[in-house]
Length: 94
Image (cartoon, rainbow, N blue to C red; front, side):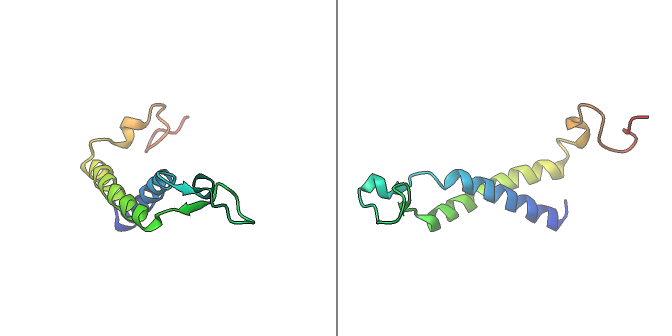
């Protein structure tokens, strides 16, 4: 795995994790009873975005190390996930 592949893998894992962490423990304006005129009641009042970004980074790095280590070690190869023999050299139908 090259450097670019590793960075792309980290970015994908980070954003997927971020979208999972984002709605956790959010306090909306409707929950607090202080809806600002012109906004939706579901708009966040306290989102703690910086804290969630750091939590996401920690989780993403751990997942990245596990997934990257699995890819580099060769424990799971392309042949392991190719159930229909469509990937890799010499697998094209004749």
